[in-house]
Amino acid sequence: MSPMEQTRFAYGEALLELGQERSDIVVLDADLYNSTRTVLFGKAFPERFLDLGIAEADMVSTGAGLAASGLVAFCNSFAMFLTGRCYDQIRIQVAYPSLNVKLAGSSAGLTQGPDGASHQSLEDVALMRILPHMTVLVPADDVETKQATKAAAAHQGPVYLRLGRYPTPTISPEGYQFQIGKGVELRPGRDIAIIACGIMVAKALEAAELLAKQGLQARVINMASVKPLDRALVEQAGREAKLVVTAEEHSIIGGLGSAVAEVLAEGNYAPLWRIGTRDEFGQSASADELLDHYGLTGPKVAAQIAAAWAKLG
Amino acid sequence: MHYHPESLIVDISARAQMARIQVLKMIYAGQTGHLGGALSCAEILAALFFHHLRLDPQRPDWPDRDRLLFSKGHACAMLYTMMAYRGYFPVEELMSFRRLDSRLQGHPDRLKLPGIEVAAGPLGHGVAIGAGMCLAAKMDPRARAKPSAFAAPSAQASPWKVYTVLGDGELNAGVIWEGVMTAAKYRLGNLTAIVDYNGIQQTGATADVMPTEPIADKWAAFNWHVQEIDGHNVGEILGALDRADEVHARPSVIIARTTKGKGVSYMEYDHRWHGAPPNQAQYEQALAELEEGLKPWQK
Image (cartoon, rainbow over all chains, first blue to last red; front, side, top):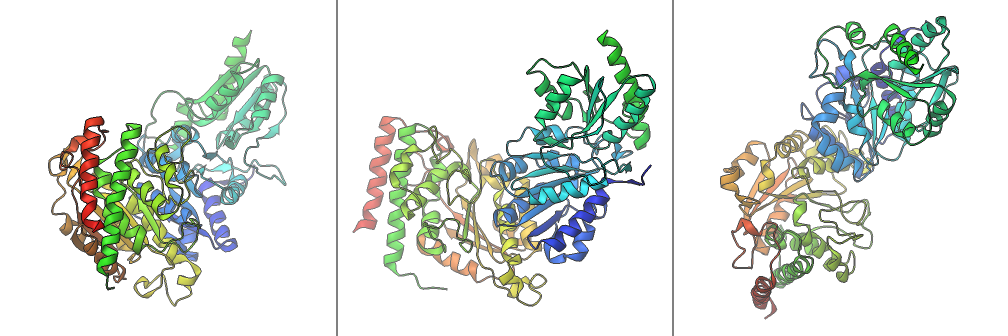
């Protein structure tokens, strides 16, 4: 297996490269730059780096002001603070005027770990996905994170980029080119289609291996572009497989599972099973303990899929 | 500080009063809109649009224009009227205010109407977004070309200035004070906040809803340059704007003491006219009083 990396580290490196490539990139942080990894950019380009303290809403509005003046503003904090504390600012000052503000939500999901429910964002994708003009990207590994960060900078309009601190293997194929609005098949399979994003892509691949041993062939699709969703690929999966499964480190309400359900409900497609957290908050524990407890490890994902398959009859 | 001839002061005062009449007509015709806070900021906006701001209505996206942020977005009938008077769009379009497919939304929309710098509606955004625009000016290559431009912002040029118009009720919002701290931290001498301090918010007197006094001391404690003026006296407004521009090492605030519902006797100091349109009899009385108020400026 390839070396494990946290997507926030790849993001920090990509941001530094962007700073070297483009003079119009500005980075804002809210007293978390060591954790969000914007420290690399801040050290290299202090004249384009702003630390606004523990004032996330102020950071987002300031970013909007910079973007309205022609710059590309990357606003950084933990995913829950960024999307939850600043919803008003994001809605009115970023999404509504469609400004070039890029929101990078770090330490997202359950794997934020022992800090507990207050710091674990299980609702951020839902919050960002329903905003008009907003693009939502949940990259799966270091390679895709770098590319998604560059794509976010190049994209005209607001982007939410979801990043994590859980070490995850590189699963992007050689020569992979991330594109906003496109999903990618990582493994073929005729019985089941697993559509996953973020760290759950690696877990889905692990689950597919386990299912293969039981004689079930699972296709695995990485859907880093949660919005715009690759509708054609979801429809194809819904036509060709007998069961579609979504897997995300997020509530099954409002995230990738909901996005896929919205497509499949509008046609004659295979039934859907959504894997994620239910209607619940997280809790304190290690990342791996939490993934196991909430059913998000490879074996737990495989077991849930096998159970859903058995119900098809 | 510049000399402002009496003719200029009369001209701006007359425009402010004419705009009050226009705003009354718009809100009466549509039976929707916020009169009280629009009437209180007429002179402030007239002084900005007709004298102080560096702008070109034919080029609303001119990169070096001064930015006017209208943070108290609910009072935008007055903003739209000043923009139309200044030539951003035809005056006739004002009567489309708050109607289907209009560019003149109930609260300003940056994408729909060229010249609108920021969306507003939820209150409290105007200082932080203004700080962002001031920071962008300081990051502009022309500003950065000066030695250690970012480290010593006091001496550097800013290609444009930012003026943000706030309500006093809006100062209830904590995020205002986050922006106030940011502007002080980065010593944004190119930022001026103007508080339309009319003392009334939707449900009552600001002093009762959420006391903000001593307001000048608060801004001063946050390291802002503070001026207090009569917000209906055009001479004082123009002088305060000039003095604010001369402060380079820190941001400036002008506390403009105003009267909510200014010019209409039964609306003044009455929070019930924050968001209610007048009926026909009320409209006719208001129109008569505002037209009477125009006469001193037309002699």
